Length: 198
Ligand SMILES: Nc1nc2c(c(=O)[nH]1)N[C@H]1C(S)=C(S)[C@@H](COP(=O)(O)O)O[C@H]1N2
Ligand SMILES: [Mo]
Image (tube, rainbow, N blue to C red):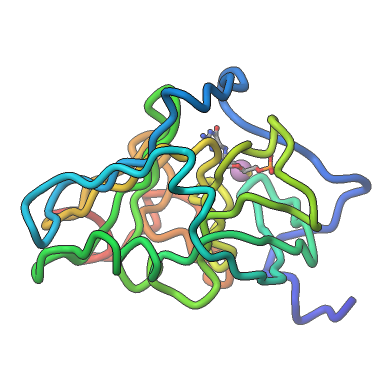
């Protein structure tokens, strides 16, 4: 593996750690939905049922994955729905610059629109050609490989378009608002003016 692929302070562990806060939620296909809400262009919420979400076109991307606790998982093959597909189906209002990704149990992570809409961001349904396992986020997880992995929200249930930035679950608990591993943006005390919510 090329040294240059590993951000500063990261290592490649043996095996593939799974980590999250709390329990693995049960998937109930009849009541599962993916909500797009907040500052939508129409002013209305948009819901996808599981049957609808499952039918959306999928794209494959290979990417590394960097946890702030310093392990990295290299060359994961994710397959899923691009943010672009979601934004076409339910466009944001013109002033939207940030997105909150919401999961089961109220876990969340905020992203700048540029990070949300980035080429490598996906709502993944598959890892390495198999459906996600329950502990990796089945049925759908966000993958934002260019940011620390707490932004790669497992068990996603929706997105909220934000007119003003707001901190998500770990960002409220001392982690960096932006989370760029190449700049080691680990903790909120490292934030420069303008990098966090006003
Ligand atoms: N819903 C939810 N998503 C989450 C978390 C969590 O606690 N809840 N933990 C995050 C953290 S800190 C990491 S490192 C990755 C771990 O993903 P993995 O279990 O597939 O390795 O999931 C992220 N997504
Ligand atoms: Mo993490």
